[in-house]
Length: 73
Image (cartoon, rainbow, N blue to C red; front, side):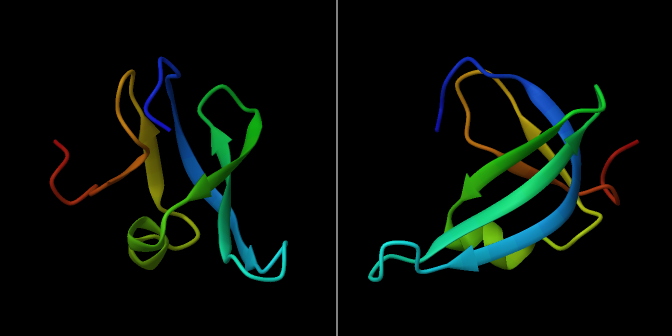
């Protein structure tokens, strides 16, 4: 999902399921800094890293990533 979209926000809900019966789909609901909510499909690696309350960022040309707030200054 590397495109020109830009947003940042906080994970408010996580869900996963076999929607088509054979593929696991992992989604997080993010409340953006603008106040809207977005349902975002994420890969297994990111799914295992995040929990409700974590910050995610989507920058142009990059995939969604978790913000490690302990390293932010």
